[in-house]
Image 1 (tube, helix red, strand yellow):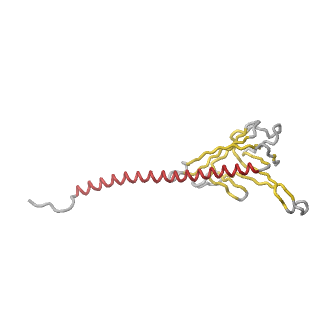
Image 2 (image 1 turned 45 degrees about the horizontal axis):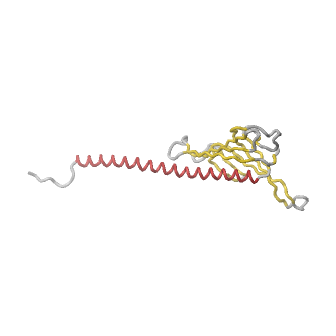
Image 3 (image 1 turned 120 degrees about the vertical axis):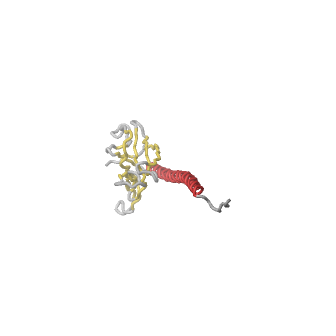
Length: 203
């Protein structure tokens, strides 16, 4: 009887390759899911930080301003300067357009060179982004020449009649990776600020 030679038969090699392919497919699916979850978690952290930055920025500038006018895309002025005046109106979920802020600053050239306090106006704008990339939102929030955020999907303003409180509801978003750009990852935030004692800014 002939002694069997060392090595593997074709059947053994085939079975080994099949088992290896099954194991590799399982490992590939596992690590792919882990990678996608890591990317989505990382982007969730980015969106959370962006949302906190937008909220802190708007809160700080509204609180520090002496005068304010909040305008929505339908040109409705959301402002409370006089409870009986024309600006005591009811606004529910109107898209934000701009926030105009007024403060007093020192100007050495004022009063004929004697110096003095003058009005200083700054504007926060929400501008549509043309052809947004997957890593951007639909709007850009700017302050002067500075960009505060490019990850905004929308900001809506709510103010109820006979109330000094203005609510901002904001969605920060960007596309999920590596999925389709149409599947966006979102963070929602809402905060309320009082505009009592703020001077109304006329156009």
